[in-house]
Length: 204
Image (cartoon, rainbow, N blue to C red; front, side, top):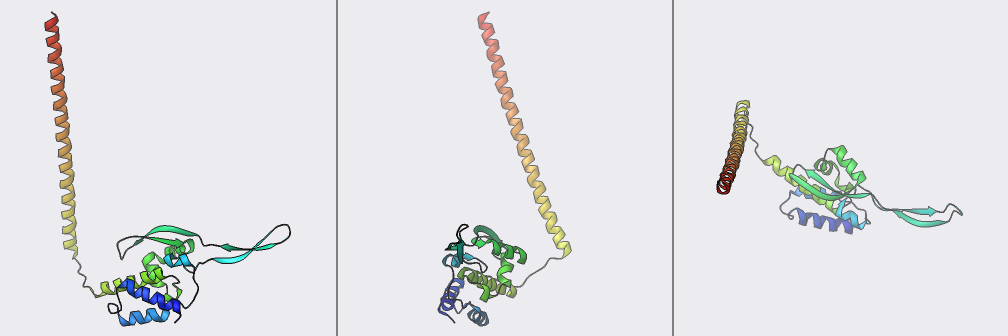
């Protein structure tokens, strides 16, 4: 294991909760499948780049064919991707190639689960993959209960009755408010009429 792979392994273990809290076979697979490449773009450690890094080449002039060195940086975007296992949005920096891979896989969770560890070039991707696998393993050990169709119909009927009661309460509140506004307008009109009558009486 290269020095970079060892450092990534330590960070992954520290982020997902420690050495003893994870299954031994899972951490063994993580240790064996960490990337052995020694060089990686610095900012790729803070996002999901799907193997896209800086490319190097030459810029050739049109007149004399003079060559000068240049670089091509990946197209990086900051996106909010929804994770179903976490039930929230994750703000992450991804390349457009990674976005296409995520769409093809069916979501950020599926992409991280289907992508092998040795193809995760970034520490963030490896950490998220290990965390999601840990949560799925915990969900697999949980007991799940299902409702019968009759119970589901009763629950749905209860929700519908609660929504109907809420709508009726709002309707009654609007009616009361309109009636109060109408009474206030009538009282204001009566006061103006009485004042006008008194003014006429004084003038006569």
